[in-house]
Image (cartoon, rainbow, N blue to C red; front, top):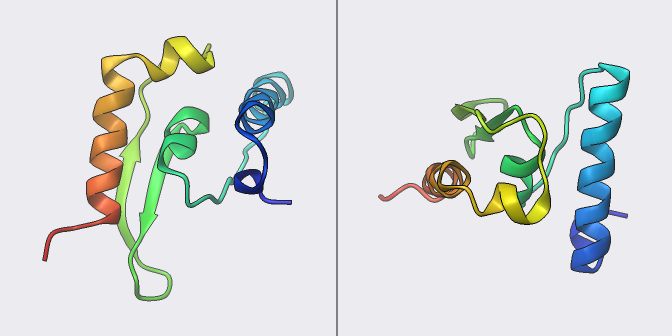
Length: 94
């Protein structure tokens, strides 16, 4: 079931679980989502794909603290700035 189909609290709990597993196991995770906020919260980088197959439109590093929490992290100015930048990359003017 995709995270977007879950209620908000369960989705946030799964995002936090993913972050804990990533840290504890030290593994690389490729997380595909249409959720801009979700991509910024769980990612170390956000890659926005272009409409054409296999092309990268933007590759944005996420410089948020490694220790994240749903309320504190999403309230950071850096979170808001990156979410805005990712949103602009997804919806370029034109």
